[in-house]
Length: 82
Image (cartoon, rainbow, N blue to C red; front, side):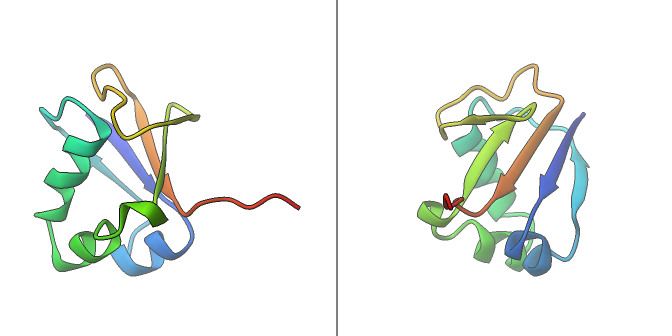
């Protein structure tokens, strides 16, 4: 099982800050495609991938990063410096 965590507006639109899933997805992009079929809210959140970032076990990753072995995957909007 992998714990998914959602932050900021993703959490608000999905209606939960976390969920546990089991997946056969190979990459973050594959996982996102799977999640889009889960609900209308998930589909909306992941419809524009330019507005979503991912971290695997608290390390920022690209969408082609493998899912296998991950304990936690977090999704959040792009961050700005300041």
